[in-house]
Image (tube, rainbow, N blue to C red; front, side, top):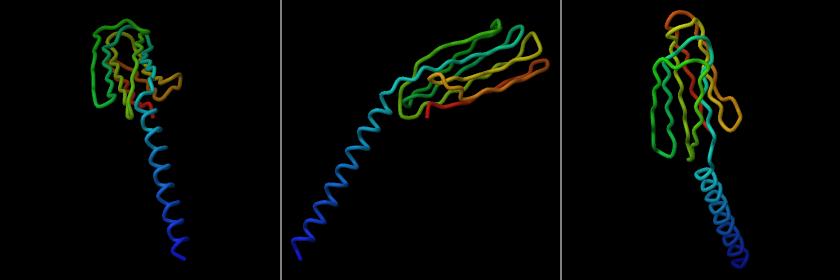
Length: 126
């Protein structure tokens, strides 16, 4: 009987080790995968644009005032958790649409109209 108990315990430990090793490989892959992020703003006229990226525990922000539309910016991001925001405020014109695309997949879009309307988009790579 003790023999079978030891066999079961050994198999359970081996299964746990295999599970942990598999999870480690998956986490490493997610942490090192590079994502292509496209921020885009369409509409007529000009807009004040700000975009932020949070990847691998780091964040960065950029702004462009009076950008002529259409406008776009491509950035790359890596990390287990990546989040992105894009905001566009109409300066001239009457419509603005923001879009965030990650690895070719649209993750967020929003449209604003009217004087000084603001379109905001938020998305992630997960």
